[in-house]
Amino acid sequence: MKNENRELRMGAENMRKILFGFLLGAILMASVNVSASSEIIAQLSSFNFTVNGEQRQVENQPIVYNDRSYLPVREVANLLGYDVDYDPETRSIILTTPQGTPTNVQQNQQTQETQGQIVGDDFHSPIIEAVEKAKHSVVGVVNLQRTFRSGTMLTEAGTGSGVIYMIENGNAYIITNHHVIENAHEINVSLPNGDRINAELIGSDELTDLAVLRANASELRGTTVISIGDSNQLRQGEPAIAIGNPLGQRFAQTVTVGVVSGTNRLLPVTIAGSIVHEVEVIQTDAAINFGNSGGALVDVKGNLIGINSAKIAQSGVEGIGFAIPISNAMPVISDLMEHGYVVRPYLGITPRDVQSLPVQQRAELPVNRGVIIAEQPIGPAQQVGLQMLDIIVAIDGEPVNNVIDLRRVLFRKSVGQTVIVAFYRGQDRQQVQVQLAELPNSR
Image 1 (cartoon, rainbow, N blue to C red):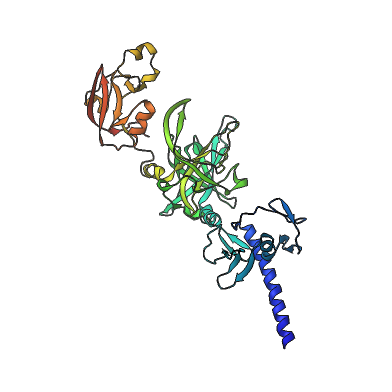
Image 2 (cartoon, one colour):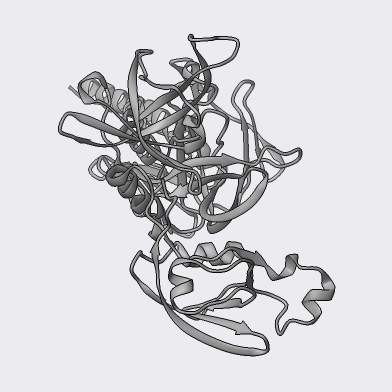
């Protein structure tokens, strides 16, 4: 009986050593770090072990399991001067320093304070969970056009990505970028399995680079509707996950991971070679390549926080991508779905930057910044008595230094809203109340 007990104890001890090895391997793969003053360098192939520059002798060879090498926790702990024990109830590895201070490395089946959850050979991190939740909402968008060469035949002019935003009355609505579907004669949506279905353009907006497509929901097999997040709550440094189809269907649902590098960035909008507007964007270092445009930027909960829109393609510039904040995009998307265009207010003036005037003319003006009314006003501006050559310097107290400022301030207002316009006429500063009307050519 004593021999049997002894064999049982030895068997348990061996199993414990193997368990320690498996646990350490899992912990190393999960990047769980034990705080210690020692620097550890381990090369598992030949297993040279160095602590603070001093090579140490390793008693046991690494355990090889599933083509991975493992070293028992007890071996590492002893090299560092720790005593080690394992608590099966809390699934904790307890490392005790010579002074008696315990350091716990704990595995919890529900949550883990480090990188994620370890179950057997699988590693489930918040990133993986977020991707699994969101990726089925991302599809490819194909721009088909007829060209002079193709005649009546449709050819692929470009590809991008899209996000399934909602399903209503058997229709699926997909958000993408305006530049992805610009000038398209026909639009296809490509599914992860390679199938293509037809989609209809509901509306698009060049200033915000947003567009909404409609497709038959029953044809979007294997897809889901994205969960909408709140981009207003984003913090610099939090994880950001970009999902899209870079370089087309071949790399469908590609995932890249980075952080929110910055919020409230202003990106110029160029139309016909001129900067006409600025939009607020999220900056991220998650890789956004050609074809990612229109795809999803999600947070670690898998919620949509932005629509990928642009990447600086310039020599020496890496890791700078941009996305349209979803909280800013929602009013635009609502307008596109309801009207097919974005309803915007206007004053009824032809603006010109004061800074664009010749130096001699600027010298005679009361201010060196602002927007000068270049032609006779119409609509709301005419009705309240604004005149050509008046210089607008503020709206509702917000400075207007140039045409871009003017549009940015105005486009945050609503049609029918009354604003206070501060302006100079000659050398006199004045102000007037103006009720904004709908921009006639919003369509």
